[in-house]
Image 1 (cartoon, rainbow, N blue to C red):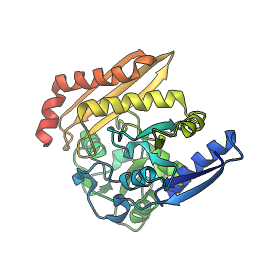
Image 2: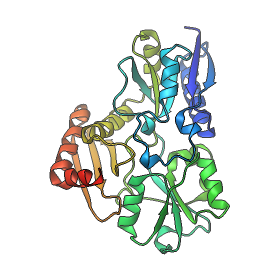
Image 3: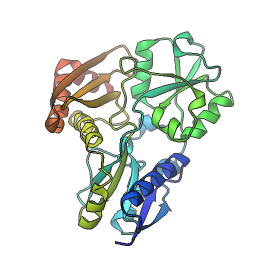
Length: 305
């Protein structure tokens, strides 16, 4: 295999991530020529659509997957948190790069920490997970929906449309925009989305040779952790229209998973943790989801529908 074509969205962050995958492959296989093909997804076309009202799976990924199945591209690069937990039968996640910073961050126009904000301040986020936890921490905040790429959202804040933003640390740092970060949220305040900070590489199930190549750049610990988080999410049947969160990490050969489900207004939530041998990462994600469902999570979710 002498030539590969990577499919990706066209934002600065997406292109950065595709280039990172390219560099990782070339580290082990310097003779492979790698090209990049930019593909517009529905998420790129319908820029004003409120993500909390999008029930369609693959809003940011399906067009790229179509190019994969038609063999226009050989591999697709995604932000893992954009990928539905139900993968198509003809493709697989062949590798996940070592995870970037998993946390959420707060950005504000005057470098003001969130604790000093009041109900008159406008906070931008497109995530119900973030909205729920923000309101749980500070109930009088004015939370407004925001769309656009990372750099676009920051510019909207600088233009005065928002007093603050909550974004994923990974995207901000990958674009070199750390100077706008006011604070990093700890997990007790803002538990993160399943797969946040991880880059996934998808390819066709039938392409055994490429899967072998991609196995060289797969970070096993990251793969286990994000798969545990996605197992939790899949068991709950969640998407971006429900405030779910999960984060897993490995310590002393054990995997630890923290998870959350909450109401949109921040008044109700169920949090729990689980730990076990790391080889049981999928089962532990399922068990944690079932515990949360049985501890009040089922009622919270049913009230959101």
